[in-house]
Length: 119
Image (tube, rainbow, N blue to C red; front, side, top):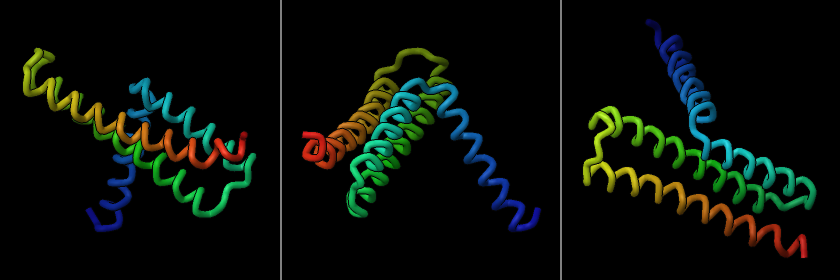
């Protein structure tokens, strides 16, 4: 397979992962709704370029963490045949914590940007 075809195929795999993320991960849909609200508010309140950068970065961080968390959960479930193992539980809890940390950071950024404009 040529270099260009391999690169195109790698994008196809990535988009397949995005479809899976939003189709089979309920929390990703919740994050998507929050992202749309943040983007909508950004247009409503005409936020600055730096504020847009902050919004974009935290949205990307949350979706990235959610994708990593989902991948780790699926791999863990497959590896241990869905049996509860203390090491697997810790790994899954830590990856869920990563999503929570990113989501809380996104919430904080949103509050810093939007609360002064709303009130």
